[in-house]
Image (cartoon, rainbow, N blue to C red):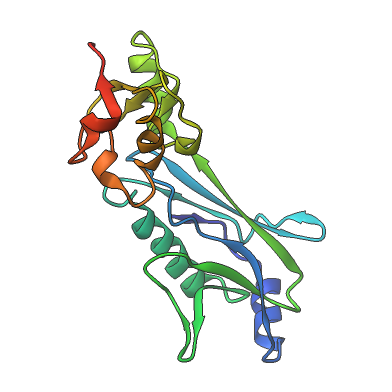
Length: 201
């Protein structure tokens, strides 16, 4: 995790701010799978543009850390610990907590912060594309899974293989592979062969 040195101005503002409402300025995806080598870029904006002093990056060092619930919680906890103008989590009857999934990013209403943008530098996927481009594929699973059509070829990074989506009526099962229906995940799901055909390397 890298965070530029915060100017004293921001710390002074945070200390002077009265207790006030927190405004939602962004959210942490609970569905984006990342891999070792990928980078999460958290960009904080106010009315004048990017606030470099509050923006930071998180480098994913293991595939386990890249699980959606893991990296998003790590970003939320970092915000809560190091950026006094912002908080991340879910508001409950017990206050703000960092949840397993679906955490929001909030800013003090008088801080001037109006947006937080999460960008993904998917180094692992770029490398996979370079290593597998001779196989040919249309998507890297599960990116754009809702758009899969019969005949589409999908690269599965974990297995390193390419799978073709079967014709109707099985096409809909291809689209379900990444939405809490992991039994249809190509190559690894319990019922993956119902939806997919493995292509020869």
